[in-house]
Image (cartoon, rainbow, N blue to C red; front, side):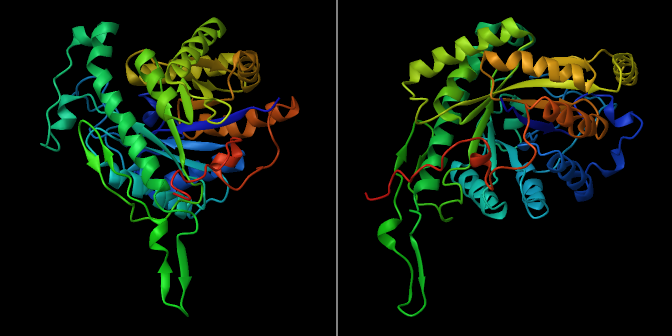
Length: 399
C-alpha cells in the first residue's frame, strides 16, 4: 500500500491568523524566494505535487461576496506564472496552478498550461475553477453574474441551481483545452533544415468546437505538451461538482469529515461517473481527500498552536475540509484508516507556513515510510506517471 501526498499552498497558510504567527514570513508573500522555499521543501519530502491557489478577486471571508477586512492576507500572484518560475527550480514535484475558467478564454488557458508543461518537463497540472461572484465579473465587463445572496448560500438547492451553468461551461472549457492539446500530433514537428520543413501541416488539426457560449477553431499555437495532456484536477463538495469531476477531471479533491462520510462521497462519485458513461479502466479518476492540518510534536502542543492562531484571527478556524489538530503519527493513523474506502491519496492544507509544511515533510512522510505506506524516491519524471496515469494518444492521430 502506497499513498500519494500533495500540499495546497495558499498565502501564509490556510488559517486566517497564520500571517501573524511566529515563523511566518508576511513581508515575503509576494517574493519568488518565499514560494521557492516552500516548493523545494515539498520536493525534499517527495510529495507528488503542490497546488497553487488563485482567484479573480481578493480573498474574502465570505464565499459569495468581497469583504472589507484588513486583518487577513489579501492579494496574490498569478498561479500559472508562479508555477512557471518554480518549474525551473525543481526537478520532480508536480505543479498544479488554479485558473479561472469563467472569465478567461479557453484558448489562452490551453496554451498557458501546455507551455507550463514544457517548462516543467512534464510536471504540469491544472485546476480549473469557476467564478460565481458578481464582483469578479465586474473586473472584465464582458458579462454579468447575478449577485448571490446569503439565502442562496444557505440553500443547497439554490446554490446548485446558480452554479450548475457555470460548471457546464467549465466542462466545455476543459474539453476545448484537451482538444487543443491534441491538435498537434506528437510527430508534427519535423525540423528538417535540409529540406526546409519545420512542421508536417497534415498533423495539425482544427478542433472545431461549437458550444452555447463560445466556439474555438484551433489548432493550438503550442505543440503537444510533454504529457500529451497535463493533469486536470478539481475540487468537489456536492453533486454538481462531482458531475464535473466525472466528466472533465483526471483527479478530484473531496472533503470528507470522517470515514462514513468518505464512503458516502465515494458512492456519490461512483454514481456521477456511471452517469457519464466514463470507463475508469481507460480513463481513471484519481481520488484525493483534503485535510487541513495543524501539526506539532504532541497533541497538546498542536491544540495550543491552533488556539493561538484562533486568538490572532479573532475567531475559531472554520473550513470545508476536516480540520486535524494533533501529531504527525496520529495523522498517519487517520490517512491509513481512510485509505481502504477508495482514496488514492491526500491533499493536505497546512494551517500555517512554513511550520505545518515542515511537519508534513519532516515528520509525517518519515512516519508513513516507516509503515511502508510512502515511497522513498520519485518513480517517474512526469506528474501523470507519478500518479500511475498513462500518457494519452492524440485523438486526432491518424485522422
